[in-house]
Amino acid sequence: MKSLHQKEEEMRRKWIEDMNQKQRELAQVNQQLTDDVLCRMSEAELRLWMEHAQKNEFIDEMLARRQQLLDEQSWLLQQDLENKKMALSFKEDDLRKREWEIEQERQAELAALSRVFCIIIETTNPEGKRTGKTYQMQVRAGDTLYRICERIPHDKELFCVKLEYNGILLEDLDKNLLELRIPDNAFMISRLLPKADVDVLNLIPCEDCGKRFHAEVFGAHKCMKQYSQELPSQRRKNQPSSSSQTQPRRTNSRTVVSRTSQQVEAIPCEFCEGLFPVHRYEEHYRSCNARRAPVPKVTRY
Image 1 (spheres, helix red, strand yellow):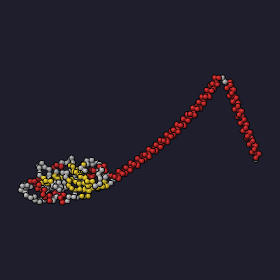
Image 2: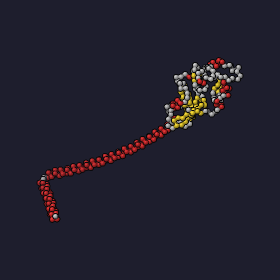
Image 3: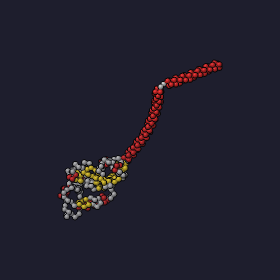
């Protein structure tokens, strides 16, 4: 076995040596042929051959330069793409952060609108005088003024309600309490304003509830059931003159105030600031509710 392997190695070595010898001989023959051709070539042909060789070298050099430029451009495009991806990721992070902030603001606004607190509302009569009656109303910060005004008891056919806060009449009923920055336990005054399509000058006001009624239905009003059914014009005819009357008498007849063209002398009350005729002032002075209870009564609604 060892001799056979050695024989194979010797044969392979000889074959390689022969191949190398043949290649060297072939190279020498090619070099000789080239030298012979160059010797036989004329000067012009030699110049052309040199120019052709230089052109080939120049072309190879330009191709290598072009490939280098293409590689650099590809690398720049790759870097630009990576930078754009990074910038896009930054923008996505900013958008996600902004969405989170907007969601937090929306939740905070909803929490603020759903906050429940109380406001105190004092009513007025159609003449604009404060009655001393107050309502402690439980509302939400998102409730509009229109919704709150609808909850205040009043004659909706004849009047509309406007709220007054800190001496300012709130005209825009579509705004809520949060937009107007109304605090908790705020004190407001409800003003009765006549509707544009209702003529309230020809109606008779009631001194107790503040509502106005036509002369034909005034006697059927619930506040008038315990009194006589006389209208103000009829009572003026039946009233005795002020000179013959020394002291006012108590009667069951109910007095009302009507707007007429005649001028009636009235005395203001120092407690409730109401105006009363001369023959009614002493009776009212003895039974004035504001004199007995100066603190207004607060009722929950």
